[in-house]
Image: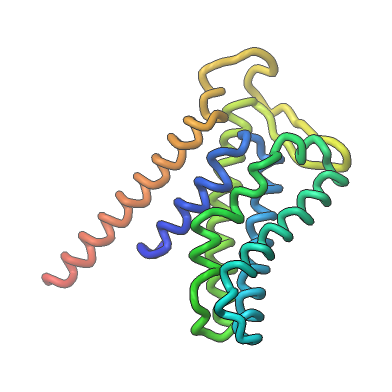
Amino acid sequence: MRGKNIYFYIAAALAVIVPVPGRLAFGLLMIVLFNIQIITGVLFCHLVTLLKLNDLKNVLVAIELISITILFKQLVILFCPVAALTLGFWMYLPALSSAIIEFSYRDNVRPLSEDLKEKSFRNAVFSLLAMLIFFVRDIVGYGTLTFPVWQKIAVAHVGGPKHGTYAGAFIATIPGAFVLLALILACYLFVKKQFTRIERAGGLQ
């Protein structure tokens, strides 16, 4: 992760990971929604620029993102009503996050192909990180792996207590998500610091 991208990952995590229940099934749906919002937001921004409607850009993009979210939620209601009911308002949060704003609302000074390539790479990195976090929260917090399937949530027990509470359940909570993100950020900063020292040492030599 480049330094200037870390703010995007933090903002995206706060919108997509932290408030969402610690189940892989819900995480997968939120990740798919987030990717759709980013890609369609980029395409729509370039369309607005092409049509010379930059003065209305922020309003138009906001309407587009909310519309995409509404459409996606309706599809989830048809496919897996339980997931749609559980996620509720949280499905709209990514559309209002600073990550979406940074990606979609800024001026487009590059060709569409380059813009999509950069956004797709960032999305892929974030999606892998988010899936890993939801994977850990589901297994450690509940002892299960869950997946959205037709009209229900499929549950596979992989270890840990099936009922009751235990210490690992903390990971599935909102504070637990914050702890996981803090640990990942601390590891990233530590590794970055070590690489910086190596580069400086090489420069001195």
